[in-house]
Amino acid sequence: MMPADPVPDRIDLRLLEILQDDFPLVSRPWDVIAGRLGITPEEVTVRLQKLQEARIVLGIAPVLESRHMGLHATTLVALRVPEDRIQDIAGIINAYPEVSHNYRRDHPYAIWFTVSAQTPEHLNRILADIRERTGIRNTDFLNLPTVRKLKIDLRFPFSPSDASEAG
Image (cartoon, rainbow, N blue to C red; front, side):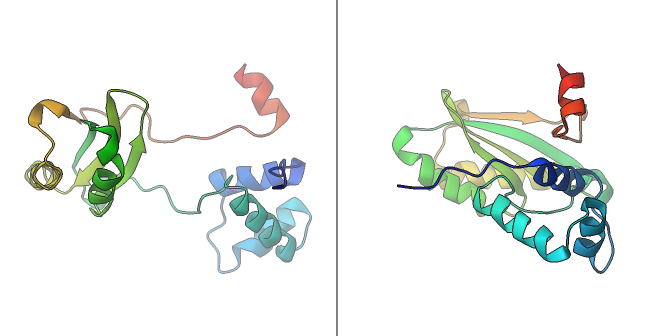
């Protein structure tokens, strides 16, 4: 019998808020976070490990603004894919460093992914290569280029006051 997934406590929830909103950019961030939480740096790392094991935290990484990094062409792509080819095609897509997200959907267009490149021409070459390597027909390949970013940030409220305000 597998143990139940751990339920994050108040300190875990505050740790998650710090990780997504106010991660200290210093040489010893766990010390700073521990001070904010009133626990030891070792407890921070133990709690973080448990959150990772529970798959609540998948990783810690910066959120970068792609345009400021020279990536001026971005698109969302949806593919109509036979069920028996989803894993194979996802593997092909995931091999491209320009792909930042790749999702399986319960939808006729079963694979959705995002691609960013320096120029529209480079982006189009990547998409053409993916079409060629996967054998997906143009009619099963939906390209939805970014026209304007409407939301570039996502935060999950964890404290009770945040949750009540969201409702």
